[in-house]
Image (cartoon, rainbow, N blue to C red):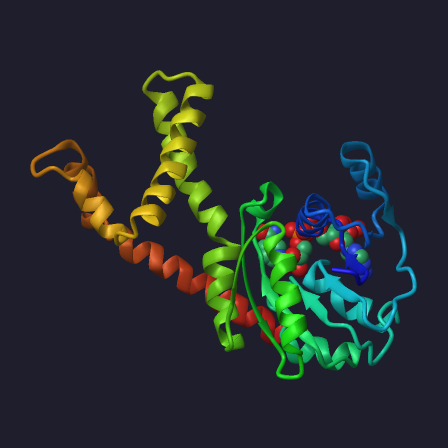
Length: 266
Ligand SMILES: NC(=O)c1ccc[n+]([C@@H]2O[C@H](COP(=O)([O-])OP(=O)(O)OC[C@H]3O[C@@H](n4cnc5c(N)ncnc54)[C@H](OP(=O)(O)O)[C@@H]3O)[C@@H](O)[C@H]2O)c1
């Protein structure tokens, strides 16, 4: 890791990436954000120096695009990244395709990825793909970048980035939605708020760990808790009667479709 990394966008994702890299001992990293209030916040909370404008890029430097997708067109025409920049361009922007990035910036080595917000606590899940021109070395290097703040899965087919956006990018929101229902239930029956948070987060963490460590199918873990005629069985029956499994899959399909729409319009 001896090349400079220039991150554009110091929001949730840009911050997670820079903190992950610093944690891994990487010092040659710079982050740019036009928002004065954001720069001040990051300086106060994390002692991070965020540049208002891009510094000059070396030809092999790695560029990370972590700005909102809507800001990309203007960014591309600003000349911050010189046309034909040789170093790989890594995008975390939802919905912006590799061909749009390649054409807009005049570059060939493009890595498109979808990380998620648990990256902020180094438990991120990033799915990424690369343009055919990207060297194996740069793909591997980028994998290590993502692994600075979580786990990473490479896919050959860019079409898989849309469902990955739904499942991994949006996943924390779907899980937090369920966590909110669990916490609301706990407080409604008399637990105090800290206990409600503790019980919910420990159940989520413990279940994830159980699925991963045992390697058992998720539905087997579910059935193992469902004693016939027991308490959990009655709750799962309620899920089944309301077709919750189908509803969750339909939500992921809708989210995937929205990612495709964004790709067509950005
Ligand atoms: N949040 C997620 O769960 C998630 C998951 C996967 C992927 N993503 C993608 O990650 C990207 C960033 O998301 P986020 O949640 O970090 O957004 P965010 O918190 O809104 O941060 C984006 C930051 O980029 C700044 N920015 C705008 N134009 C810029 C430019 N030309 N150069 C440098 N910085 C610029 C924004 O400043 P202003 O506020 O002044 O505009 C803002 O501070 C998005 O493309 C999003 O699609 C997000």
